[in-house]
Length: 240
Figure 1: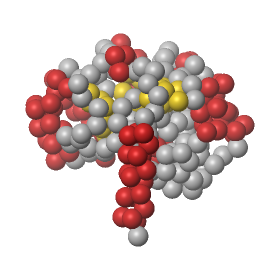
Figure 2: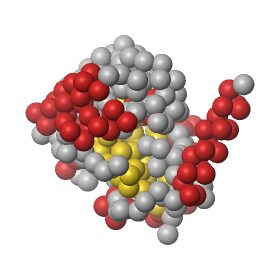
Figure 3: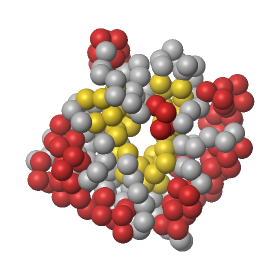
Figure 4: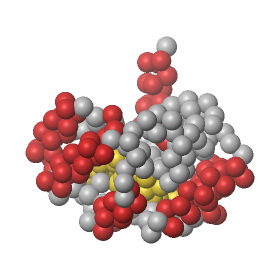
């Protein structure tokens, strides 16, 4: 059976609180538990423009207690390279292209901040979706995280010690893949975005599954490899 997931990016101590709470009310209405990415040590100047959220860490723990799934969304959310790494959705990265020791420092610092605020994150996804093999090595040695939300594939797969949950779209749509993650940035959403999301949830809300039932050892298939190749080939053509 096809499974859908929602991933929310850029939860931080500076965020559009009202839009995030609007999203929470909408997902609660349809009993959907998203993956929400917390920026441990936010230094992104674009995000720092938002008002500081009082009681931010208490709010993050509250969401986790309600069944939302916390993830480590990078460390500072500041881009340090123009590399796309193994998932070149963008040509900027907080991680891809950096030396392994630098990445270890960032991963260690981010995980420590989450842990010190009693947030247990078992999932990682990088800002701008970009990471490389050094990022995976850093995560493997410095944290217990073994699940990545990113890459293009038909279904969840296991590779190099990690489970990869594919993330294929920045908005809801009826895609043909076995497992689909829709990535939203609540800070940037407008009324139309919320309306489209709710219309989709009314039709397909029952397809949003339980993450624990999805993460399993399945090796990457030929279909997964072909889909990834086609996806990035199309992106290259569109940029020309």
